[in-house]
Length: 256
Image 1: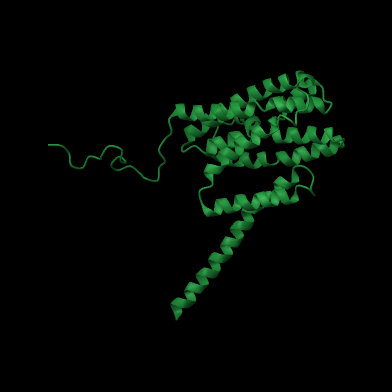
Image 2: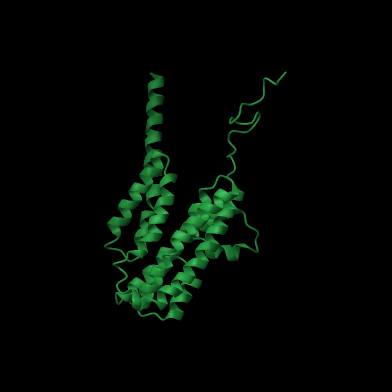
């Protein structure tokens, strides 16, 4: 006689903890990570062309990608230089734009729990895309695989396409007409959108967009991103105040 208590096909195993997320197949993690790494890595070509057009040599352009390796800061730097800005001001704007990676690192250090000797090397890969892929995974193993595959693919391809773009800048012509620099932000938004599951998360994202775009014309490059980060504490503060007032109101009704 069959066991009546056996779980049905497709249902959670008997005694399984529903709070524990189901693991994601390694192959699926690698596939997603490769997709992000390849899609964003190709935009390094646009950076190489833009950097060469701003007057940087091929060596300087490649050094930026090898050592800095954060596309938004790199584009901000060469964009400011191309507009005739002071090199120190341009570097300061790029620095402010890259500050967010430090906050990513704080979160990823808790999630990945990498060995101490690996962390200095992994820190080079802490960027928007690797963070998004790692945070989207259900388990630590999947997060480590996603972070590593995305970081390695993106780092190699970004530097190769940077070199190709710097060498082929003259043949390409006007880079703005191609719109290649939009590939990176587009992929990041595609990764972020499915993660906005609750009303609070969507509200934070909307307020951040308003703050970022609102201050973009009046603040130096990179600073609007930091201002947009204030959306999270602002929304949580407002919601917390509503919760406190709602609790007091319910308490008064109960007393009546």
